[in-house]
Image 1 (cartoon, helix red, strand yellow):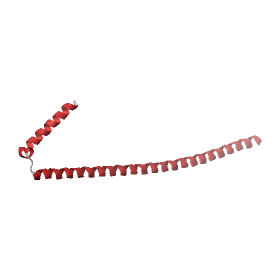
Image 2: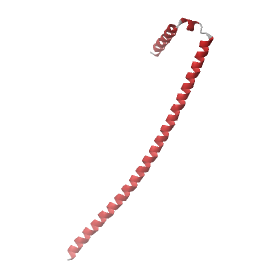
Image 3: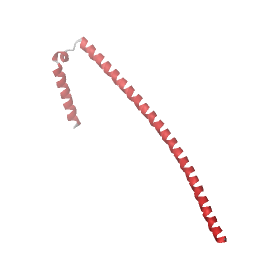
Length: 111
């Protein structure tokens, strides 16, 4: 299947080149050869620039992700500390309520 695709693509490319003009494809002049060389250089420069920009964007995205992870971990740590302190406060309140209830019952029995 891949061979058929390659053959079709080559045929279409050949057909496209032939339809562009027989004069240039048969014997390109020096000016068209240098133009295609400069076009190739420009295209290579554009590809290099695009690759550099893509690498920069990936690096920035990784940096932002790392910053987000650090911030999320800090928020999670804060939330855990708050939950622990809230839990401790709640436990102390319940212990105090239980002590008061036990004291009330003992006082009721003693009187």
